Image (cartoon, rainbow, N blue to C red):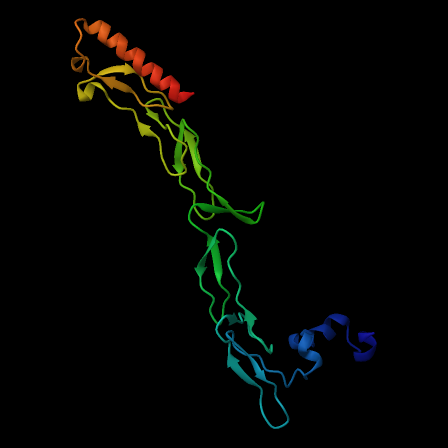
Length: 210
């Protein structure tokens, strides 16, 4: 139909259309009489036969991000649950939000999720951010972690000999090394002292592990 009316191929006829003629407000104004206003402003008064269109700054709590000729600024958005304001709303831009500390954005659920806590025997390799979860790793043979935590890294085992103490129980990935000094126990035979200390410490460790 357009080819018949203009005598031009359709692609040439479309190229002559003004972008403004496709706007919803085009039915109220001729494209030649419409005016676009800067981001951060809006159309306060339409043009008439005796005056030009008038723009005005967006009031507080509203914005326009693009060149426009709309009659009302858009209302600023609000951050959702477990989110914090990263950049406040301005006349020419909406507010930007990010997950608050301790949370990260999970695209699958489109929401902020609490950072995962590394289990006992694992430590934090990389702390979680607003965009990614906590990254954990298994503690090496000379380190341990005895608590669930989203911040704590693996800690080195205690070195008993360096402190002048005897090693009673070698550390594992989920508990520290146990050290003691038999000199603090009033007993005749040091071997018996060591045996009793080992029994006491081992029982305590196994009880906590359960």
